[in-house]
Length: 259
Image 1 (cartoon, rainbow, N blue to C red):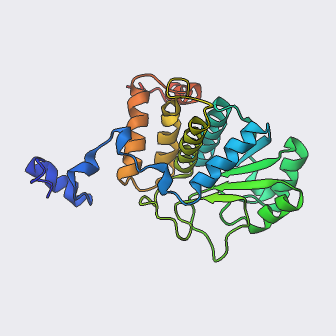
Image 2 (cartoon, rainbow, N blue to C red; image 1 turned 90 degrees about the vertical axis):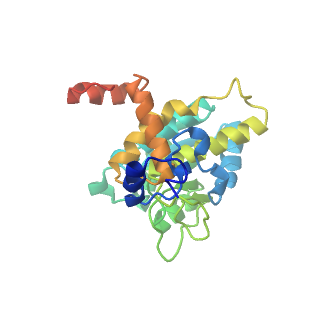
């Protein structure tokens, strides 16, 4: 099939050995990304966050502290801020407070940040007790995660996770940073629909792709067609010197040329 699609026989053999069957899977342009609407509840998340921004509600990102969690947190903060949200973040010490949105982390977040809404990135799908503790305090929780769920899901306001039951998103391998990037794409589309932005004035979310690429590779998720596009686009921007200050600092510390 690859050879019939015009791929050189040697390359066709290499690609086939890596599980590719269709020349279209070699596309790395952003237009080839799976559209956000394929993610379960993403439209509900976009509407909810757009309403929250309009109402001036205070959001706090609760992030995991590995590279996927850190890049997801930075992506969420930058993207939400660009869309007019009041947003802060907290990265708790896993050894002190446990992993995920635990009741202890909810208490810490409520005390230090006093949010109306908690948004989890790269965690939360197993945080049944933590979500219940937040609800008891009147704090809504939006869960964005990519980990496999347990037998029960938390009673969150909305959950976006390609691995939750009944989610038809074809790429089950999105990293946490990929999931939150998709939420931002859906939110921007919702704000365009409401007339907050148009194609000229909307925030350029592709500027976040260096962070998306870094978190995706560092979390060692499968580079399926969709992730390969996100990573290729992020690398392209890094090589051209278009990257965030933190990523540029990592290149300097590593003594590497971005290009």
